[in-house]
Length: 363
Image (tube, rainbow, N blue to C red; front, top):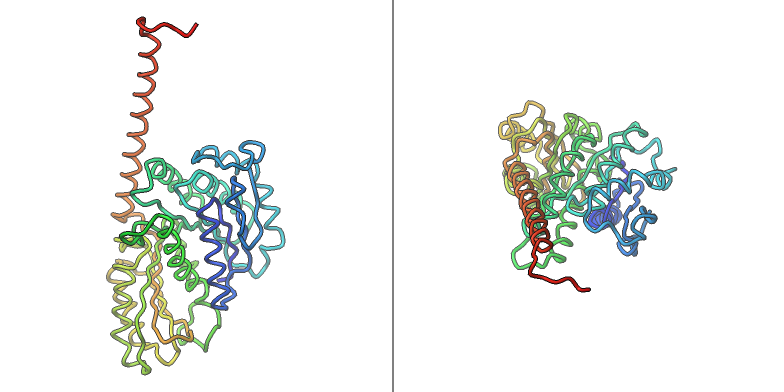
């Protein structure tokens, strides 16, 4: 699935860099172009593709300070600069555009939905979002930003593939170390998904191409991507159990949005050496996904790839009914109420100060 990536905000730029690096390292050639957009000049430094600094007249290259309303306003005012950077990149061979953003920061959470809406107005290819939910320990402002952005982003994009930071964070990791590791995990998953329709090694028995991804995400809304891998035996028949176990792990414990199993549609992809992929195992795993997701739209196929391991991807479309998602939205709502209460208390304290006759003014 030949795609162009647009990283919005600091997290979006870093993840886009990791996606491009993985695609180049694997030699897939799925990513046909990348652009990073930000309001903070320092966050664009060192990115190995074209960058666009927006909002210079408002924030002078210093970022929006977590204010996603300002991030949205700046993107609305300066989206022509971003569109100019895309000139010549969205060619006839490009099959999708991905807008990549962390949903907790100001530029990403505010700007990504605005840019997505504008891209859909102009280009006749699917425009997907790749959004990162902040972890529980990232502060209430990030929860509120993500809660507000999530609804808008999902509405504007053809589908929004969500990644929950808490699903990947390891105990004892610093936030920086955690983000780097998460980006690597996401890049591997999404990179394999985009490359699965490309003729990399051999010929697949059941071809997976970009139309399978597009059809799986056709219902729109929220999407999730699961992944798991295992050592492969040389003979395909010996790998039936491995395909079944990696499929279960991909869906139940390796998903970008844990506990999201009730879906409108699903796509199962098994990657590995062509002779090591058991057709019987792939079909059995596809039927299991069909039962587990309660969906009648479950597609399956294999992706020949030179590797000593078998890797399973499970793409889910239409997972808005996820308990994890509902819990996050409640967390965002609680954070908003706490923020409102704190602001109200601060205003009352200020009023009390001015009403105190016991205090003399300075002059």
